[in-house]
Image (cartoon, rainbow, N blue to C red):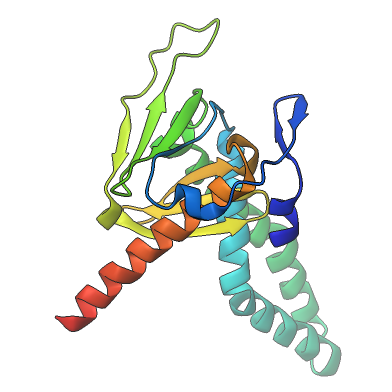
Amino acid sequence: MTEILKRNVSTGAEDTEVSSAPADAYQTGVISTARFSLGPAVHARQAIIRKAARFWMAAALPLGALVVGGMVYDIRLLFVGAVLMFVLFPALLFFGWYGILTRPWAVASLFPHEVVLASDNEVTVEYHPMEGRESAPPEDLVIPCGSVTGCQFVGRNLIVCYGGGRELIIPLSAFAEPAAALAFQRRLEEGVESVNRFNDDF
């Protein structure tokens, strides 16, 4: 991830040179992104990747047991394993994918929007109308600092988790420079840590 942030940040079709301003310059001020939009599939892909990373053992162990059992004891167990792999798992993946695509925050990401991190670490998402469409954009989303449960880099995106499983995905290319993305993530993570310490004390 550090190597990605050191590269030039692409905004649209043109690349802009990365500024040498230190991340400390963003520690107390307002950080805003350029206007961007995402397809709902981005949310689905990120969610499935994280779920697979957490629960792959739960699927791999039974499947592996069926393969071993089919090779050693009864070949019919191999058929059961093939059914799980090529029928059941794809069906579950499809329903999970469709469910994520229809979530309100995934649909809202279709509209052009920009993200602003205020000096008090409150996150505001400002939505704008789509060109050539009459659909009204969603109302601006305000995420208080206390509602953020995590903020991490995943691939070329910065993912802000908030409000019981909701996600705000920000492409790194939307930031003016890598230092802004780093400061954005650090400030929100520090807020999460301070809330956790407060809860532990009580």
